[in-house]
Image 1 (cartoon, one colour):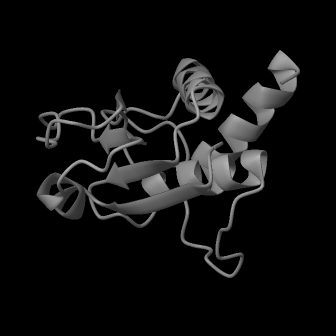
Image 2 (cartoon, helix red, strand yellow):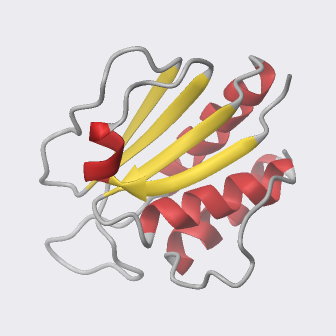
Length: 136
């Protein structure tokens, strides 16, 4: 089995879910927020802290190239370890998590609603550009 599904949701929804066997989580919080309190049992968890912005703006934290590399490596590891799916969450489950989920879906040819346009364009573009730089 290879990576077959990527979903995105709010932090509240992710915290309320029991862990799914064979699934990983990408947990996105704002730079000043406490980490999400996820249930134990997820195969892997990647935690990222950045704000939902598209351009640098003090005092907020913009999604970085290093964070993009972390997402790229995490998704590749999940794919290589035969993880069934990745659940991506952010505070509201609308913008940051959707951008990461869309990139994973594009990269691994997974289903994603192509009409969904509320994803954070900076996050998605940074992931695409970083992947191209790495030649992955």
